[in-house]
Length: 311
Image 1 (cartoon, one colour):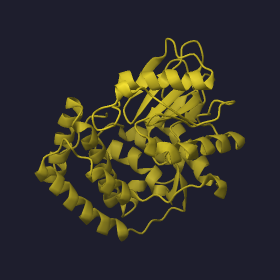
Image 2 (cartoon, helix red, strand yellow; image 1 turned 90 degrees about the horizontal axis):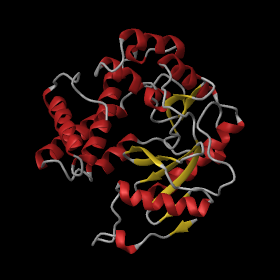
Image 3 (cartoon, one colour; image 1 turned 135 degrees about the vertical axis):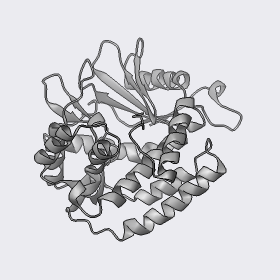
């Protein structure tokens, strides 16, 4: 369902700025369409999505940055409903609402709130969820795409407005080299359904204490190694997990990605994607610009990544 927004929010180019103020206007209109009350809503996160918690009801509202996400969010809703049918512990869409909604240039979805106070689960619980997910056989009706990392990389390279020409040229060359190396990888885990952004930040503990997988819009078909790479590099390269935590993850999943010969290449590809994502935010956010510069310099010089910051 498509709705409108006030022309007062439009910039001279015809685009609507993605800010806390404009997303609040989208929230109010979307909630009115859905029969919900937006008064007192609290902004939980603001990044690729604006994530709001409604007041007085266990409802989360996610607003994407642009309308290009409509197909992706339609798929996320299908995935969530299917996982519910499978009794898999994941975020549930709010029942009784036709969604996604399109309000202006934004795509809006409504979700059941997992918890009242944010509490992340553990790496062993993430590993258990991934192992269980990877055993599921997805129906064709989900319409999952094939995961194409370098399509994402090339798209990201076109949106580095805050980067210098030298940095863009370096990252382009880096991407071309890694694409060739990636094409020669011999994956050993079965090909199939992945979460696409599997990391400790996307597994919360619900009100009953159960670990629940959230952020379902990246589901795709790919080598399962993609669902293990973030946990590995968060430990190995950035020091965001301890050795004990990583070993517990490996024990519960049953495979150590770091022992696979293709690990360094996959790690470089994922690291590049993380850096390009940061670069896409650099023009508008000084903290992102500083972090982007730090990451590019480390990749260029082979420097230590231990001072990289989660964002």
